[in-house]
Image 1 (cartoon, rainbow, N blue to C red):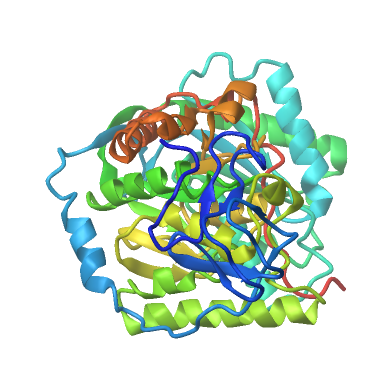
Image 2 (cartoon, rainbow, N blue to C red):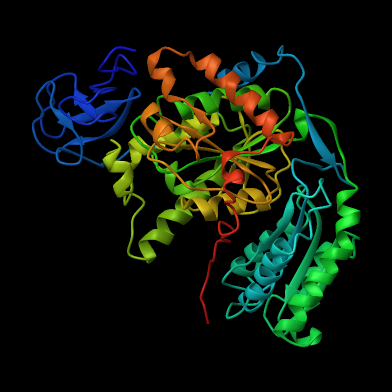
Length: 492
């Protein structure tokens, strides 16, 4: 591609693909912009000039700032075009992956035993048990078991026993325990916490894959560690009996994530992932965009293709909630991008959001979900989550995502369990610097690789990972500490 890179004929800025008057990924002015003029990228307003800007000048936080963005929403205005975007991929050959078929129709991409703490007080015992089982080689004879994963968190008590905060945590814990990538789950509580196992049993029932114990009833910390290990050893033959077999791609639920974004995120990896999402959605797969604070300013691009008025209204309600929530806590949704994003060339939340939404492709928005709510609609859904990657991905996995695809421009050391993460580098410099962490380089799109070819590579990689190919983050052992349920409400 030529340097600088112009994304839309209406843009007043271009992107440097090589270092020049500013680092690669940053913006330079294509034309003079007087103070107060709109700065345009992707054909959209990303901010306003805070001083006169000359042609060729570096455009960034020193001369460009966030300002009011349009609220002239017409939900569904682009729905016909979105439906056409979906239809144009219908003629692709049928896709399959090799997965673990569960009772009830779920299909897993991995086969874990999950140790689920109901409260922070049981975090140590599940982590210690998982670590000791690993050091003792307990899984060595069980090739079909991917591991024993300990899902510990910092809540479960000192909280209201009803309301949104309680509901969110219960959804997350039961969502992980009943996940398609989990062959059996053991809940471990202290015994006296707010998040009572007895209440969780009511929502999960007495299914054979769920097991329960408490530290107080078992006889203390050491006795509980030993009891957990003994129970896991009993479960291993049963879980190991599962075998992979062919499944349609419509059984996949895929979480779309980005973190450590840069000026190339909205140019390479995110649009390529968006097209891959369209291709998968056309065959009935579910793809889930999240991070409500990081679609702020670009929400119109989703509202335009809302499948129903109810879908649009739910998304608008979530955005209003976030505006109130941040204001109550002395913050603002404009308090973004992060320092790393800015160093990578992103100046305002409008610019960041426009790039982030590109991950969702161009097909209809079929559903809007609360945090951790089960993902049921084929095609594109949006889930309300914070922008903080571990919390956001935790919600997607709790909702049923069996795989996370994560784009990054600055570099991210992120992984997840029981659903593995694939990481896509937005630029070749990052890919070469962090090869152990990156599964795919999208930076070669700047050198001529087409959007269509890169999207096809992503789809192939998704199907391979779903069929058991080990991702880079899995190989590094990441994912044990990225289980972070969203804590909402007072800590009392």
